[in-house]
Length: 144
Image 1 (cartoon, helix red, strand yellow):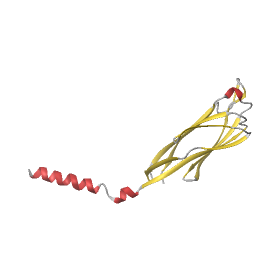
Image 2: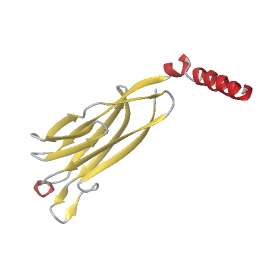
Image 3: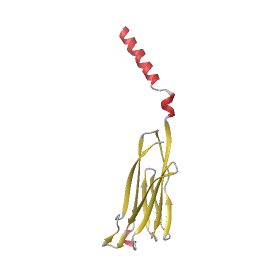
Image 4: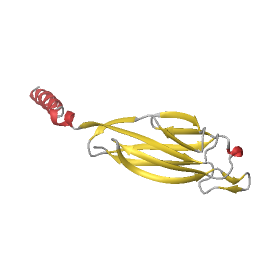
């Protein structure tokens, strides 16, 4: 019976030891979003996918800016979490020349990554732009 009591005491002491305040304090909220700057978007419709959900917008002018919803990841500081973003033209047959997109991804309001893309068709349907009809990125971000 003594070995059973010993194991029981050992189990409960390690259970409470592993719930120390130091571990609880190491979690932090990390906020990530992307700003898309679209040039030559002229009346094109776009669909955007991120960890925060699916969104869409129409470029009503030649130069348009769209900011995604903010993704919130509560993780342990120093570990990696993932953020995915994708953008596609819905009506590619309507593109006149390539649509130039600058995608700026921010982590806790600091610029994390900036990339430029060229999507659509130079001349539909034969001359596709460098990034076809859309693009996708997956980032492994170190939590703050």
